[in-house]
Image (cartoon, rainbow, N blue to C red; front, side, top):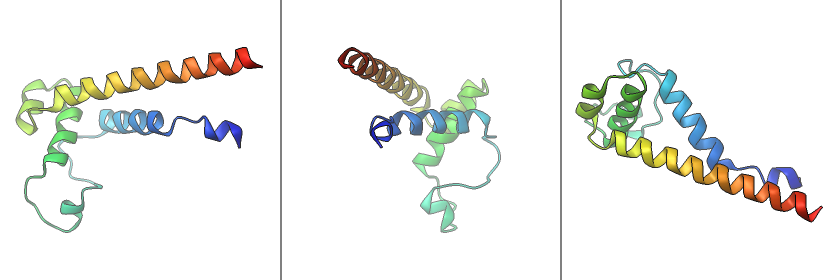
Length: 101
């Protein structure tokens, strides 16, 4: 149980989210977690646009990324920075627990 307490859930969430966006097809309208899309509303959703924008970035389509949502590149950079922070925090925590033992 002690190992589970130190499991970085936020880190896993961001990594899985980015890997999913990297392997998804931004042109395909497949399964989505968007409540608006799941309700059948075809209106433009800023969250969906942001996800597609990041997916286009991973596929090298910078113009399409910007057309989907202007905040795609800054959002990706912020998420990558947060992942780096969480990895550093995890490393520091692991180092401290090894010293304590």
